[in-house]
Image 1 (cartoon, rainbow, N blue to C red):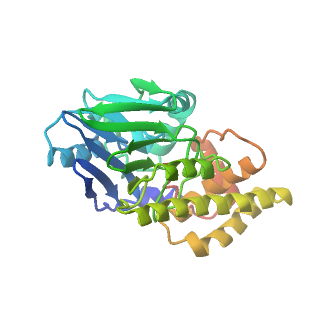
Image 2 (image 1 turned 45 degrees about the vertical axis):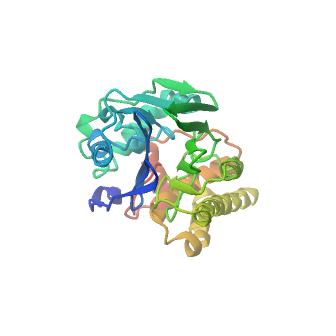
Length: 326
């Protein structure tokens, strides 16, 4: 069996650093994991740290091009390695996460780190500079508010969807939302650690905020209310469609492999053009099938389980990719 195709993905992505309002920026990279930047009166807050300190240095460089204020806070939207392991680059910043996210780091952070580093040579270049797992300094339950001077920043554990700890950063006055992987745009949601039953309600809660601009977990910044709704609706449709197929498969006693083939055939016409579709679908199908069978808590992905899953679903054919995890 050949290695993951993501080990061959060495093409640099074009970075966009879009100003969504005074002092508010979306750092996006053609389907790679996004970050957000909030500049307050005296300091800066970053949403999602990137995969390594070296990757984070590019975010810091963009920030330094527009302000010399210190970066004092980094919010983790969830626990996945590609989001959090660059946190040590933000020297002196306090790391903020939901209590559910910290619990997931305790339970499965090391397995997730080992699994992802093995797949992503481009995202994890400079991985030797990662000091270890990223641990939050401040943990909150449900929601907290930071005042960066006169700028109000609400940090909300919005509900289970992409992970059990999904956190969004909301600026109510400016109506700008940093959504993490609760929402993707033109990019396939990674659902390997998802909660499909809860995801629609989480998106309803997110929609109720009334964002007029939104930075998704992957894909470009959304810059008006229609684009925001398109991003939310597209994510809702993908996850709901896949889970409906999983429930049908389980109801008729279909094996996982057969369900995966049917799901690929059913989903590809509508979603196959989205970034990382083929990469995510084996993981997505595995989790959807598990949840449809009643497994509420996602199984822990390890390098060994990754390979076993690929063998089961892809046979002995070369793996297309595993450029996955939010």
